[in-house]
Length: 239
Image (cartoon, rainbow, N blue to C red; front, side, top):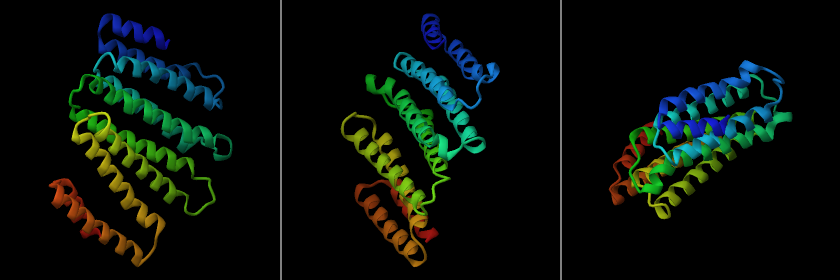
């Protein structure tokens, strides 16, 4: 089904065909029914569909296709996590598939323009932001049955480090626009801001936020990055 959808879409050069086939492909498991508890099979099936989307994304710059595919994937994943997730049985799947989907769609969004050395559209930046948000939420929910009290802090810190690395890689090695690296830098800062109250208590939170605001303002002033200065002022206000 994935191969047929990909080949038909590319043959007729129509995004509409891809979108219609995509909707049908995601709906098939729910229309057919079957073993509703076979989570691994369901998300492996979605992963294969997304591989087809990834292939198309390197050939055609179809924004709606990428947006709908990522939306369907994370909507199905979040619905399962909220309604039927069992941490003891499906922890590995709940942790692994959000990461796989995040990598797939991040490459899908940036791949076409990366190869052709073109700037991303505003829609691409919005989509990248939502991918980071949904992947983070999915991983956090995956740990809901864990007994360790500081597990959410470590998840948030790990997410911040990953996005910091992505900001460095996008700026240093792939030649993407400064906006991409700054987007991941902002996400990194926001995650670190969230990390502080999750990990610490009392006056320590105010001290760390105030210190972070001063550092952000100084960097924004020296590097002439207006967004960092705005973030610093917001953090000052919160503190």
